[in-house]
Image 1 (cartoon, one colour):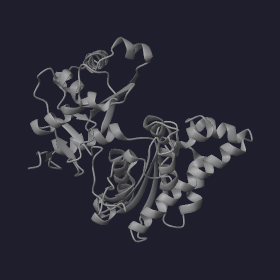
Image 2 (cartoon, rainbow, N blue to C red; image 1 turned 120 degrees about the horizontal axis):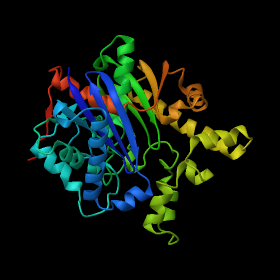
Image 3 (tube, one colour; image 1 turned 180 degrees about the vertical axis):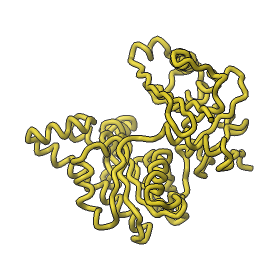
Image 4 (cartoon, rainbow, N blue to C red; image 1 turned 90 degrees about the horizontal axis):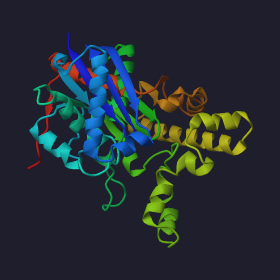
Length: 363
């Protein structure tokens, strides 16, 4: 039996799980309120604080770091790390990952803290650290990378960890290897990504990092570029203010003043016509992105998969289905499976079922 410790840090959360082979033995999610953050303002202080919480939790379970065979951690965005699969945290990848960690500055979000927390937990132990399907996975077709102007390249920042995890689940249910399937996977959360999966590769996907795709609970998504240019050069807004319109105060937040989709549905139930319009518009934009991925797959689609937190909403999934269920069968797998995917990625390597990918600096 292999025992794996999974780390998945957010800006104000620390998700931890202990897996024994494929089974989750225990998991928790530490929430860090404003007082916790202000008491540990620098990245280094955050690392020590979060690692301490994890060690206390493990001790309560009767576990120590000496009992683990490996760590599975969520990966950060490194443009040169494009291939999907499980990476071994070698010296080259460690050095590149730590470039975005600034110990004496406040953390902008949780991802740069993950490797330092892992190293703090290890305390010099020689356990392997594995990163499965990092954020920067970019397997797009060459023709899918052209934006329309040579000055802008379409990148592929999306949710590869969860998209590929649910794709593997559906492939297994269909009795086929993921590498022989053709899926459209829509991850519906604070960010929304829709990917065309063909034979184990995501050959086209909207770039969530750059605001491409449908609008979301708090992001504007793709907007008419002429009007955006006029807005930027109007002199009425700073760059930061425009950024906030597009990410943070865009999407549902911009229209309704909330990014809570449950609140939106409550407003609709109470007769709020504007909330209903925004909800239906979001469903339509997601469906249009799914349709675009079906076109990339030339209409040959085994299944359309709806996942992520918003997929818990039957009203949203029903609205999306109404547009796309003639394209292919639709399966709804709500929630996120990142912890499980990190554990299973590490487990495949530990068992020798997959070779670890070794990062090398480009020459």
